[in-house]
Each structure stands twice: as C-alpha cells, then as structure tokens.
Image (cartoon, rainbow, N blue to C red; front, side, top):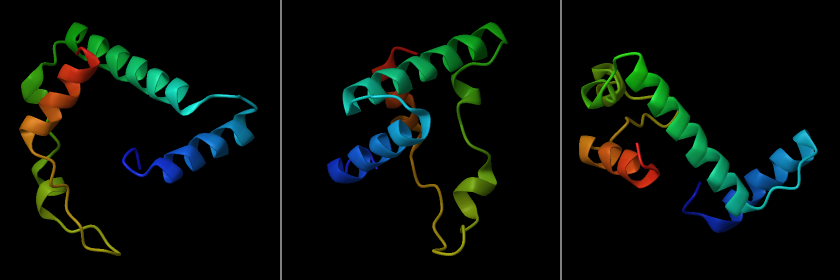
Length: 87
C-alpha cells in the first residue's frame, strides 16, 4: 500500500479514526521504521541474524487464496529493507 499514495493516506486516516490520533503519513512511516528497528534489536539480542530474516519455504511456494499469490520478495529485497531502516 506504500506505493499507492491515496491508499496509504486512507490507511493512516483509518488508524487516526480508530485510535484517536492525528498522524500524518510521514508520522506513520517514522513509527513503522522505529518498530522495525526495535524488532531487529530484539532479534539480534536473542541471537537471530540475517539468515533468520527469511520466511519459511511454504510461504514462497504455496499459493494463498483467494488470489493464489505467493510471497515473491527476494532475499536481497528483504536485506535492503533492513539496510534502509538501519537494521
């Protein structure tokens, strides 16, 4: 949804309505980034590293109904997300 501006704005507006917040899309990105950083810190302290940042094989192979899509994000793309958030 991040690559569909109107959709992302709608998600943030929905969160604001439900939570009583007044976040902007920039705020939502900052909050999401901090959550990813905290998750990465926790995982590292628990002994998990890059090799553990991979989804299980079935997620890459088994189609998910109703559209029968599979997770087709490459390991390089996953690593890039962590690089972008400083993980």
